[in-house]
Length: 104
Image (cartoon, rainbow, N blue to C red; front, side, top):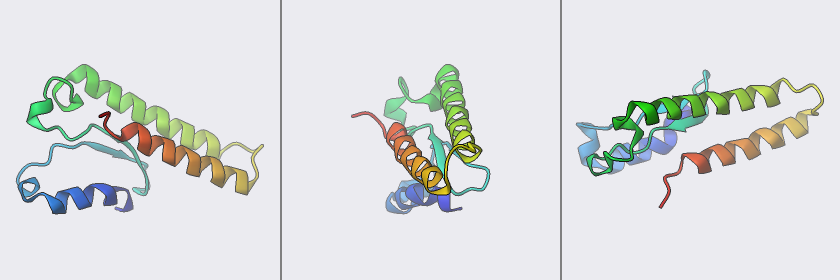
């Protein structure tokens, strides 16, 4: 699925990922666009990673759903021209990828 490409590189880079890969992803139904990531899930991140906390995992899922709703809202907005729609979707895609990037 095209939406998994950014994570495929990490999967290939780390040999240990072949036996354990704890990242959870949410993609659009067509599998093209990532709209949510639970983060790396490294054991040393147990106190902050959504993978280990049901409340944070639920937030990750609801945030992903809100992102999908935004995408659908843009796609169905009849006030937008096709070019405006594409520009808004592209900007939202960048915003989503930035939101999924872990804070440093």
